[in-house]
Image (cartoon, rainbow, N blue to C red; front, side, top):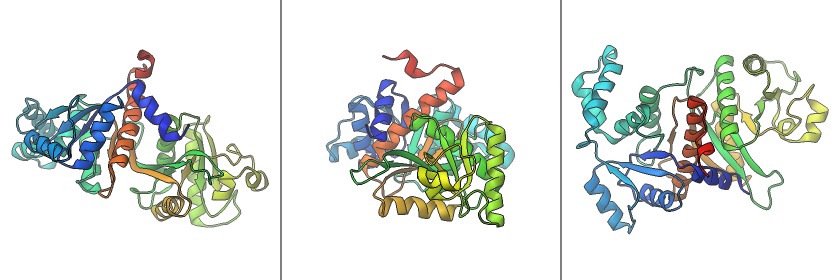
Length: 346
């Protein structure tokens, strides 16, 4: 079974409440209708209800089974604004500004997630990445166990010509430009959690470099080595190799020859790039030349799930991100309560 199909099946076993705040976009509505029809998520559409209904009618989309919420008339808006004002008063925000931002669908949707009215958010088909990420960080916040929010791509190798099959986590390919060793370690730890939740197998982490086991001497290599040590100190049980070149990370025969005391043994499923140059180039090479399907960029390290979309995304892309966000929400709930929602559903 393809990695994305496993994710969709897992989402369907315990559908979570996913809020979409770009409800006038036909792609979003198409994906929302599919997710509702197939039982992948419980969809909350935030926006002007009249405009949403007209957009759905124009695109021949049935909104049955979805909840429509207008921040301009919702009884939640005033309380959201007061909460937002309390969070940002010391940074100079006024009550009027807080009210304005909570009447905007993006702000309202994120506050729904923060306060438990929704389990996760998906946006970015219309809003910019900068706005989506900023509001998610400011409103939903960073997990206490992390110091930064980073991104990852779920890369799927499922075509007949792929000699490697299954899913991979690539991180960070979209957000943190030039992480230092401590930040790189944080990215690796968050990506390991993403692998556990979405690949449904133990994470096997490769800290990528142009060096393997000290074959090159450079400050850039030192950073990767230091980050690897920080990850090992934080999670001694985690399988991780670093510094390691890509071929030694994913080809067992090469790992046997080149990697000293390998824990991953050439079977990495989580690839950590040393900077955004390498990560962005790497995922696009895998997508455009290698024929991998790239889902993302997805966010990791937040208190609750919120994911970004490319403004050029398709309805299928949005549907898959809804499924991913649902599984992230399941994992977040299990971590928070100690009880997985999957354990309570047939």
